[in-house]
Image (tube, rainbow, N blue to C red; front, side):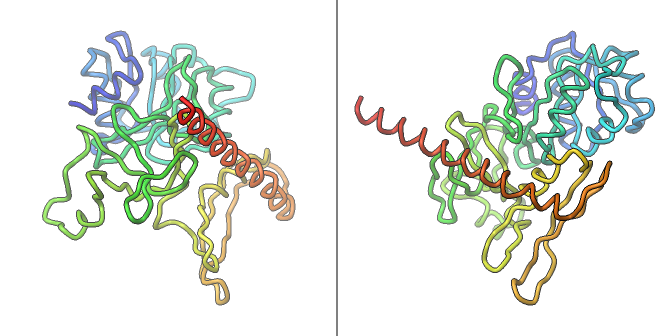
Amino acid sequence: MVSARNVADTYKLTPEDVSLCVMPLFHVHGLMASTLATLLTGGTVIVPPRFNPLSFWSIVRDHRVSWYSAVPTIHQVLLGRTRAGARTAGAEHLRFIRSCSAALAPQTMADIEERLGAPMLEAYGMTEAAHQMASNPLPPGARKPGSVGRGTQVEIAILDEAGNLQPAGTTGEVSIKGTNVFSGYESNPEANAVSFSHGWFRTGDQGYLDSDGYLTLVGRLKELINRGGEKISPREIDDVLLTHPSVAEAVCFGIPDRVYGEEVVAAVVLTDSATEAELKDIWPHAYMTNARKVMLARQQQQQQQQQLGRQ
């Protein structure tokens, strides 16, 4: 009930809202966000037998759907059936679109907003928190591409391996507290011993908070590629590759390497021609841009601390 209320409050759901549930109801994404949060506020839930991109927009149009929530894969499929510069019939009824359960590439967010004319709000959830923990806000609040937003009635902190709180701009393990966060795994003391630290539940996700409290996820701790001792986030490379106009899909992963232990490779789906060298050339510029963002966030935090000290 707490989680459903948090979702409803985040998106200002009312009895006038119509939710299209395309996520399975055995999954907290479809059950909590699309369904229970809508029913809690007296809205209407449309549940098709299964997700079908061929009939999706006719359902949106016929039922005047005001929002839907889905994983990035579904958003990508729907995006592939739209045309730049031509708004899809039925999309005019959408108040917002929500993405959760996996990382949404900033380029995908921009393309959906441009083609559908509705704000795309990326959120962050997991079963251990009865789904939602953070979300980008509705307009006029700032929604930051690549970020999952601020905590939605859930405290979010970044911890190091020892359980110490980390300052803004510092990457560590995303940890949470809240009424909707579970108290532990049943009959699994070993998992509980490593999952809780000073009252915080350690999610296993790696990320950082900016000076505004917006959370950016870097990846799962277990998914990091260890190349000769350097920890590399696959998602960071995915997002960079997707900025190229010829790249429709991208996935980075590690493979065994005799010298480095693991080597970084990526697979891409192209919509137009692009060479390997051309794709590799994207990285230096993107890396410097990201490094500058982190540096500016740290400088801003230092300035705030100095100002507080003077006060």
